[in-house]
Length: 349
Image (cartoon, rainbow, N blue to C red; front, top):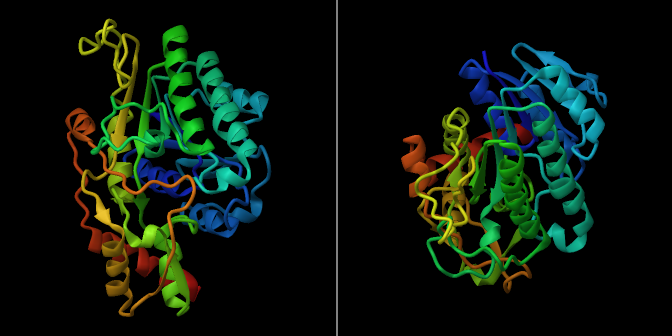
């Protein structure tokens, strides 16, 4: 039985990934600092769904629930992170822990350096001290920044990020490549496009819009609704990650030409993939699906584009499809219904 460390396991994607890995006979150790960027009760609800008694959570105390373990830790705590690596001897690491949110990075940029840069450096240092077969780490579609060369391809320029969140994710990619080069840590970065589904973050559009409609309140739609996103259902995202975990990149990739270097590949064991749906959806169509699922119209207040935001995201994901042999298959209507049903059930409780 292979052992996987999932950082950010109390988070949206980390929670769904842990559930899937457990079903596929992996042993999972989850790590999260359970910060208050959004309501910690949602994070506790995810952990309870995994079988944990959240009343017993203490810092640096490992809890067990079958083949799954959880420990409350902060990635900036290098000594404790290294001690966990030494004790558990992980086969794989999936680093999903990060300070999330593009807009929040305008208010509190230092938290992105602490969590996303210092924290990721500590993961890299721990993988160097206690080698793993494969490090998979979260990047973001936001690294494409000012680029309008859509659909975004992994080898497009990412030199013009629009906010500290995007800059920190680009830094992660460069840091992972340097450690793959120096210490032979096989690493794969995933540029996530807009992920949605049950237990989704309350700062994301699906949760904000649904909550406002349920409460019969106005909600804001930016750029006067003229936006599109490559919405991808969370089950398809974690299925992709599960398939990727055992497929570590190899050195001396014949597709890499050092005379014409491309960002997504290397002579070292390193690669970058977009992970999305390859099918952008107009934001107003997304709103329409929520309205259909709830059976009521939303009260929309149109606003201009927000600072640090982009009009459209659209992923070219052919490289990942070819590599893992899987394409997202969940229809938007079905995915939105799943979220709405889970949300309505949660407010009943």
